[in-house]
Image (cartoon, rainbow over all chains, first blue to last red; front, top):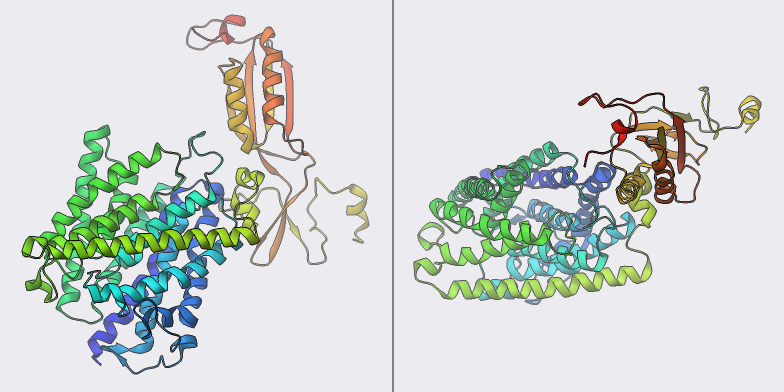
Length: 430
Length: 116
């Protein structure tokens, strides 16, 4: 074990966990004020539900030895996950680091479900999804599964995390159906500063996500960090130009979106490509996501916060370009197309197709199964009123005016009450 | 000329605006309001503190119209703002002494007739 590695991975794990609340604010800023708490809760609750599911069973399915398709249950209930070395760090730290990835991946899907999904079924969905979809896919690529055997390159989760969540989001949006207002009324973001703050915190956390995926305090971590810094800068720059050319205005929502798209695209490549390649990769990645975003908004597909355009398309672009720009002289692992190994692009595409097919079918089955037991959507009236009040009994921005304190006995406080009959107030016996 | 004041549910605003535009009612002012009309209370909980929201958020519309527009306007609001549950709101029709259009100084009927 290396002390430097342990120190860096302790920090990285905390940084990646920070990404989930950051995502909550990124998404929360994009919805209407009547749904902001529900949207934030979708991320915060994912930490609890998916984190526990991961520790108890998911980690074992992903990282225990087993078949090339899925791990066995030898590490279930954290059996044999102790302080012994796993690579350069304690096994239990590796389990936690990977757990933060499961949490953010499941939370990413919520962007396609906002403003209409009931909270209970949502919790059931992400718990099952993390177990049945995320864990096996993580096993394929990182747990010694069949895609690792093929030589697919996915440094920090372009395919496992982002393509996976992006496709799940499309399927979930289709199963759930559109918001009632979608395509009929303008639905505007209620707090764009939240979104920018969320994007910035995601970027910060992503240094742990990508540079931490080196699983050590070493040269590859430094390379991944440099690429994680540079690629999104290029994406933001190109995005600003596209905005300016298209509408004459450089938008703040555009910048926040571009940060995420750049980060997503560089994720699979972070430890495999040169910093200069990362800049080119980030710049290229702006184009497909930018135009898919515009196209999607004109369709009837209510992938409400564009999880597919940002994570699906960004992840796809990044995964393919990893096969183009990978350089053995930097990483000692593999060369890509530009360095004499066209075969790598084919392997990357096979990995993408496998994950797309599995997650599409699996997500559909899980949601339909939950839908057989209970309704997935809130009632129309709840959708109009907003999910904050209906699902959580709270408002994000309340003036407090007109709020009357209810005492434990069920009686109301001393303030005059408009709705209570006078007799009941005077009697005070209730 | 009349001033029509309507108090409606916020979630019905879009429906009401759509109905008003269909009825060719063009000039209006809206404002956020709070009020109580006997609807069932909303109970909320903050760290164990339970509160009953006695005042519900409402939207107030102020619409100045010439006499022959009163009925279509009221009709449109009644139809679009109704859910059938307590708390749908009220529509008031008030007499108006005088109206001026600030830009031109026109008054009364002319001031509430939309510019074509």
